[in-house]
Length: 447
Image (cartoon, rainbow, N blue to C red; front, side, top):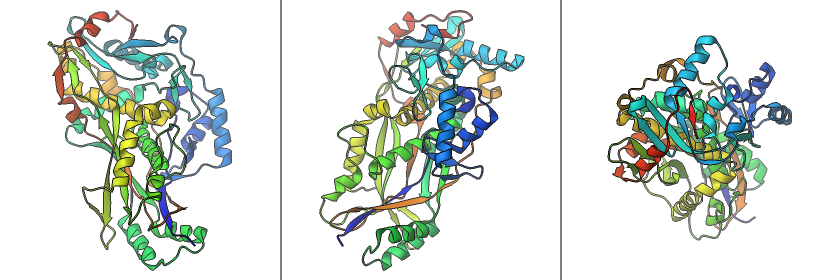
């Protein structure tokens, strides 16, 4: 039998529908969405598994019945739509005081697809978030996306979490990680040391999966039950599925990592680790510091080689194989196109945008400068809550290669938004955007 590359991957989950933000469904529908969305199931104990056929059929029915039509005045695509934080706060406070549901358009932040500008209006006691926007629909993953672009819209839930997590993110990264346990790696190393030939691939795969055992999901910096957290883990899951050739990339010029190493010579990196991080140019601001622009693609992929000692504990190396570096580079170069084809990656960029603008608002004291307070958004409104993911099963498969086998067992997402907010340059033309948008009394979105 030919030598083979072993690939092991975390059975994780794709993006979850923010149920209360979508359709006010029946209780049975709520259970379906908690159970299985976008290719995974999560039970009340936080165990992640592959959804059954019945789960998928039930979820498809939820999608068919979901009401996610945008109001007529928000349907048309525009390069620049604003959301007034002052009026958003007033709307939330009114809904909370009167026991009314939050309007769908508010939950989707008027269809904003990115936060490109943060604009401060001290004379009107307001801060406005602005960017491209349009009406919305639900895509095949259950994500709410632009009606024509397919790019995911921003969610009120994620804005709330980003704003409330900003102060903590000054010192602690916002992150997720999916990692094997030390005991699992120790067992795996023991099994691998006894392998002389692969033998029956299915038998060997089961043996390795059992040895590695469940892997641990950890989330830091945001509530693990939040949609924000699920976005990070889902994007990590999708990235590694592409890297390890579990499915082809939806864009050209992005081969899997396994294809990159299949034709290489010599011993390959046995435990490449990839993670996604913010990728922004310096923030642009006007001379007065009242108009700010986020610039750059938003997300990049980083890598290094993991080492595990005899006890199974990770030892970071700070180094990476050429093949792993090449794949990270290709992923970064293709990210914007990937986000257009896979809404999971677009949602990760959205929450990174929100984390950065929350850090910017906090660092530059923009709400203080505007004389605007947000007690409902910051303290009283309750974002959607989901089962927190705790562990995932390891999944192993094989691909032929001349050489040794490769194991990929970890990865994640890491954001340090205050570092992005520290990099600033003055650009006078940014002020023109602020001059072109004027908040309207009693209206929370601005065209």
